Length: 198
Image (cartoon, rainbow, N blue to C red):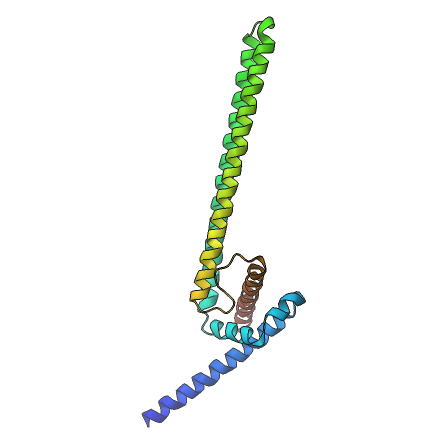
């Protein structure tokens, strides 16, 4: 008798899973219609069905949420680093202006043109250094964000999410961003439906 009960429960679980898969697939198909036609064509029934299967147990939603939180923290940290650098540059410029003004006030009139030429060279050197530091910071930010994207792609690929693998191809990245948007919208729908069920 226990054997039949276990088989019945497995059949019920299988039917529930199949129903849930169908609901997710149907929702995905509806959401895909909101995408540009060029991306609709690239998202086959099989891809959407595989994505729905990956979403069944809810783990992928949690992974995507975790990746989103990590991305926001990373972006905030990089933004704050850039702001600190800009603030340091602002302070440096102010100190240099102050130093130049004091030197000009203490300078004898006949030496003023020589002093001003030297100060102009110093100002140009500082501005060059500032530009180089900003460029280096921007490159660091881009590399860090690229590394974060590759980590996200790898994580989602390992989780078995259809359409995800490590790539730098702009078309594939856009497709992956659209897939993430579909997952996020499904997640939001699930939350809203959960609230209305309460």
